[in-house]
Image (cartoon, rainbow, N blue to C red; front, side, top):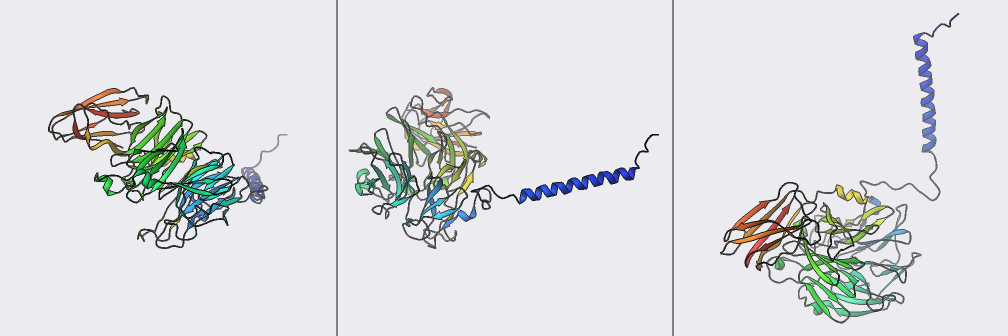
Length: 490
């Protein structure tokens, strides 16, 4: 006799019972997982908002009248170190901080209030230098009292005694050497006198390489725009003689191997100078924002290694990828990443992340709109930088400049942007033919793209075809004239 099949209601009740049991099992498993203790040595991380941990914010009580930027970051001794700054060595709350793997922040008792944005690893003595502080591999901190009262902006390798001494550059243009073991200090030079700087100095970056010390001063104001003589400087020193390389604002000097990079700007564009194979070369880049066209607002753009042997360059509101490899003396691997409106005094890699320092709110110079000065860090993946604003900018190779016939302009970056327009203005009383050339590989092989004729005291613009690009572009006039050649990229 065949078994009688179950009634539909019985089947339904059986399935419901099985489902109920399964849900009970899943609930128990989930509860057990939730109650599972953390692994030994780890704790739950504090909450973050889009990569910002509010508990890591730093501030000063000096309201109004100062700022509290994070001037330098460095991974060292199994933690992240940062040194903060006030505007004029006045205020409170700032100093030297350490952050451990669980994002617990501690202000070091050796902290002193100051204006510091310098960092360096001294390999011979195995010390990290941040501000006036010398940190060994066991996280012991010593402070050089002789220089702690100066606004420190760069620390550099010593030319003749690299194992025992380093150079310190101050914002006011004083150059010191400090013994890394005894912390004894001696002033070597006043760069205002050496470089002929008459206006208020604002020295920033410095770097030693290829037997020279290179320093940058980014003094810049309306007099630069009006052509009344700039006080900014890029200069080099061989240990005996100072040589001025540029008389406009420069911010950062960095390098690796046989290459030195220096970034600055003038009324026309961002400037990139490259030292390789015993000579300096000049290049121009777009300005992502005109908001940085003043010494105070162009604070600490950097060139840093963030992934192994890969560099990021940050200047005038734009990030670039950059390689330390320069073939035949030419920087071929430079490409824009993104634009933004952040103030980023420094950045580094730490525990698989890229960390951006900030200067988010400043209540100095009579600006009371920002309230209490405060800053924080932003933790992200390096690739997240490509999610910032789309690369765009403007600038040129000439801005009402006296142009010599058949003298090519500096190369101007063209790669990495979409829509491109060239504006040409001729202030001469005669017709001028401008030859536009492109170096599409980046190896110095220039080819004529087009010749544009501009009438006397006239103007012409040219829209490059959609999708057209090259690595560099330059312009040459067929006769002496006063001209403007301006590129706008979107």
